[in-house]
Length: 282
Length: 289
Image 1 (spheres, chains in turn red, blue):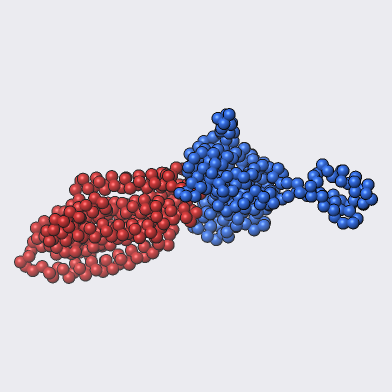
Image 2 (image 1 turned 135 degrees about the horizontal axis):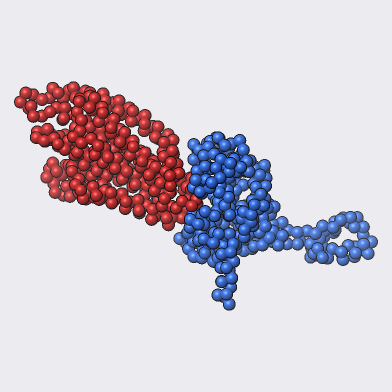
């Protein structure tokens, strides 16, 4: 098992795509640092003497960190999808899988090991970028989230769920179809979250219902929105109200049932992938 | 009677390194295998022949657990094909395979040693690379290898852990004549070591040279099986006389003394006699549509 996990990790890290993501991430973090510095500087002038209970640094910090989390989730999801989209059918078509499958390892262990390798890299990447964005926000404006660790873990968990979906898709679909399909599911989840926000703003029960259903169908969005929620979980009053109006308004508390469901969902997706892979002719 | 025959067939299959009985495989509308019986004994080198689409690769894939049979039995070293115990006993070279381009030959073999639970270590890796004629390629990345070198590395990979059964699907397809010779010598070495080999190949001359037993498959069925010498047919006798070469198409080896006596008695000078036998290729073409 360890041999396959290490094989998966090395393969993930050696792919050109990983290097490209690292370069893009470095660019993103540099721009983020520049933007964060400007945002903190400029928003300090927004607050007049009559609005003393609105802390501009909280406002700027929460908004830019929320946007950074969206970018981190997006980059992490892209990485997760590209690391797992060809694990089964793609590798089988390329002839990479057969020499491994005939070894006395077991298909379930092989699949789990490949998942751990790819999801591990994607999760570590997300945690690293998240930590960097929090550090940059703190450097630029002296602001830090109300909760630091949990949002990062939830963001990483969201990417792990996306990895599991791409892994399961790789049992059935060719790499390109799987990549497109998984990214469309990812996009659908985020769009449903935005629809929920719109529904909340215009008091549309139907839109909110759709968003709730989408949370159960695509719990990575629930994890992401809960992570956003925890950034400013202790912020109250006018600042809290303003934050729900801005681009950072996608935050919602997921609650224990949904968070528990996310874990069960992950297990179910991987179990389905294992079941399908174990009967698949190669 | 039929039951007794089935019991005998099954008993033979269980005692062998590879035992296949009544094996069928259907891919939707395509019947890839339609009831194949086959055994490979310890140390035996069996050649699997047949036209494209005959079901050879499907048979090999079922034996190594990549494909599930629709009906019938396939056992490797007494364990059901595809089980962990069966996979521990075999090595496999796929017809179409690739190793990660970023790995070196040594890393590929080390990975497969770990997966096969082989305790051979660096000495086994060195020995295998030497056996396949790649002693200097230990640190060479797969990306820098020619197709032939990768094919040899594939054979070395299949031999990791000294398996009891080697399933080689077109092992010489990418090799030049020198590479084919290396593989032939390697197969001889495996025979000496008592490793059973099922060799799936289109190169009949190669199979004829190295295999103890040949199985010809067509349309998912075994259409001929036996030692290469059994499959070849006698095709008459040619006698070289002063007046030219005389052909006796119906004559056999046993008829040679009589033919020579008759020719000499008739005043012919006999310079040579050759018993004509068909090649494996001719025997193959006879039984395959």
